[in-house]
Length: 136
Ligand code: NI
Image 1 (cartoon, rainbow, N blue to C red):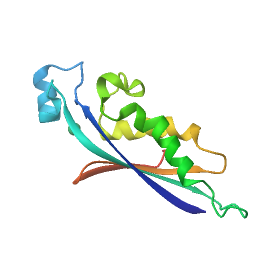
Image 2: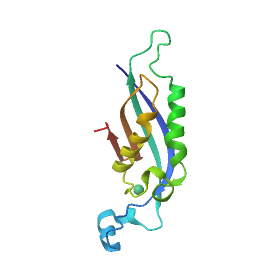
Image 3: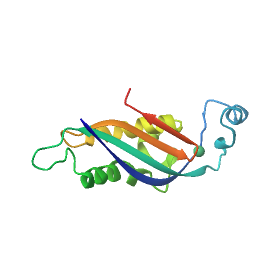
Image 4: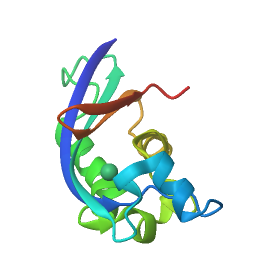
């Protein structure tokens, strides 16, 4: 197996908020991330796929096609969007990095080409924080 990683970038806003809690409880748990007027991040996403290179092309996936799939399934849906309100696959879900990366996996995995398997997704929220998900 060979592993290939494609990086993409997008900007989006969100708010960490549990509607079952009071405003005070939300601020206690989420701090300024609970701000009712939202806040933004410049995210980076690293999608790592794996496969066995084809003898005739030397590829297991065409990196250009992979980039197009990531853009169509993820980036176009989240870039310059409010994650809480405008991203269909995040409706009713607290948009923490943990939940976000798991939903991104669900969106992407069924749309990959034959012979190209998702290995991990790394979602970088700030220069100090990122999450990684391996599909388990
Ligand atoms: Ni945030």
